[in-house]
Length: 401
Image 1 (tube, rainbow, N blue to C red):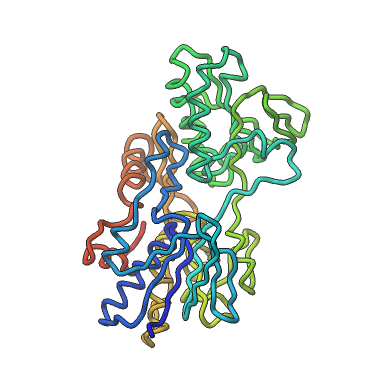
Image 2 (image 1 turned 180 degrees about the horizontal axis):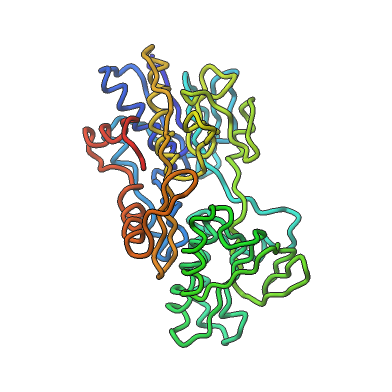
C-alpha cells in the first residue's frame, strides 16, 4: 500500500507543497508514495490581485498541472484534523462526508480576513477583497453605482485600514470609480486608519511615495481614527465623525485558517503554528505547515515569514520537499528566505519597490509599476502543465524574490 502525503489547501503554499513533494519523489524515482491535495476547487486563486477589476479572471486551473505531476485532487472542504489517528474528515459540495488518511500532512489552508464581531453593521454593510466571491460582489456593486442618483454617498468609497491591502485597494479605486461613473463625477476615496501617518506600518521609506501618489490620485487619509459602526449610508468613527458612503471596504486584520486550532501547538497572535527549521509543526512528528498557517523564521536575524504569496510560494517549496524527504528517509532542506522585497501598487501613479525588511526604496512610479505588473501577471502564477517544467519550478533552492 502506498504511503500518503496529504496537502490541505490549493493556495500558493498548498500548490507549491504538492509540486515540490512530487519533484523529490521523481528525483528519487519513487512511485510508492501518493500525494493528495484537498481543496474546495482545483484552481489557484490569485488573491494578491483581488483589489483589481475583472476579478473573475484571476484564477489558474490546476487539474492538468496536477495530472502532469501525479498529484491526486480531492474536491472538498476540510472539517476536522485528527492528528492522533492521522485522518482528515471533509465535506464535498453536496455535504457528503469523507475521510482521508495520511502518513504526512501539510497544512496550507491559508488565512482569512477578520471582521470584528463587535463592530456594528460590518457584516451587513461592508465589502472586502479577501475572497474572489466577495471581491466580485464589490465589483458588481461598483459597476451598478451608475444606476443610483448622483450624491456624495454614491460617489464616495471608504477603505477601512491603511495596510498593504487597504493601500492597493484605495489607490486603484479612483480609476474604477471613474470607469463606472464617468470622468466628470466628483468622486472621493477616503482611507480611515489608526496610524498617525499614511502607510506607517510599511516603514518610513514608502511614506513619501504613498503621500505623493495619494495627492496625485486624490485619495484622502483620515488618520488616528477607527471605525465605530458601519451602515448602509456610510461609517461613523470613534470620535463621532460621520462619512457618507455607499461603498465601505474592510481590509483590516488577517488570521490563519481555523484548522490550525485543531493542531496542538504554539501559535503566534495571528494563529499561525510555530514550526521548526524544516517547517514541521513543533510537537508533531508528521504535520508540516506552509503559507499563512506557518510561523517560520526566514533567517537568523529574527525575521519571520509574512502572510504573503512571496513567502507562501517558498514555504510551499520547502514544506513539500521536506515532507517527502521525511518519508523517503533523506536529508531535508532547512527553510531559508533571507531576501525580502515589497512591491506596492499605487494605482495610476505607479508603484514603489523596496528591498530588505527595512524597506529601502529601489524603484518608483513606472519602473516599479512594470515590475509589479510582471509579478502579478507572470511570476505568481503556477507553471505550465508540463511535468519536467513544473517539477523543475518546484525546487526549493529557487529564490522567490
